[in-house]
Image (cartoon, rainbow, N blue to C red; front, side, top):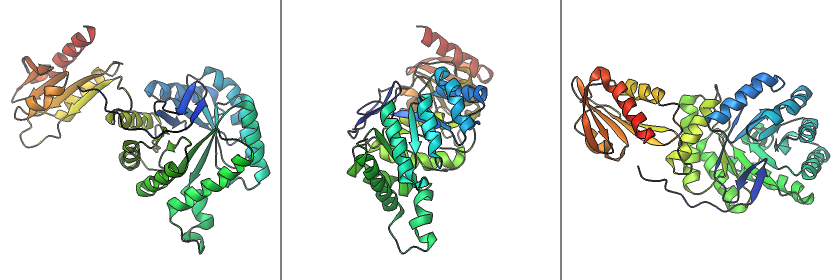
Length: 363
């Protein structure tokens, strides 16, 4: 297969999050968030490790209670990736997380009305040398200033979010703090694209891409990729989370696949390519592809495997793959890097292809 095609990246400041760099030309990092109660240390650590194994570079934890921030002293030393404390309404949680040694704070200043408390968090982060992500979403600006509240302010949502961030940046500027990452999230892909484009135009801080409450895996992935794929192809974005309802490792799988598809991350797994099937198809292509994916799920190296449903377009479509199977009536042709190796009966397709894959990997 051809090597990754890099899109021109927007130049941003570099921000250190533990041993990881966001922005400054560093590789785009993948984030996710645990859905355990953070105070449950064994469950939280198990999920952090699962997310890291799936490809997450940073993991965020909800810290709404003092018990959650108290658990950080046991979580942080055991985590394989940098940890972000998610703080919304209680500035004390931010101070406690910083004191525990967390690697980054996610803060929405709009949820803390007392600017003195926001300044206390800024001063603590500055003293500890950790960054803050200013996270704004539609829910934090619309009820107070948007059309639904009856306000006369009719600015479009993207402008509302960008203007809110600009106002918050003044607080950080007064404290001489610029170790920042910015985000402006909506559940609407078009609004997100517009907001992030404007943030990219106005500021050189690294940007955290994401849609908020995007939905389930089926719908949320599509909405997220519509926005983030567009922005990443324009060179906008330094780190991202695909936010999905349900098992968080699905977020990581989707985010990694997006970056690999755009050539923005080197693939370190098997890439299974499958035809969409048509009336010529004589095999269960989806089931074959899934069996092959499962059989090679332990592989941490990029090889491409094409599963094609017929011999009309199959051989041509499979030319660029490392291995390919092209199904016929009762049998299938196996190819390696475009060369026909032979044919096998239907019931030997998976076994034969897995054997050839292992042979290729061992060479």
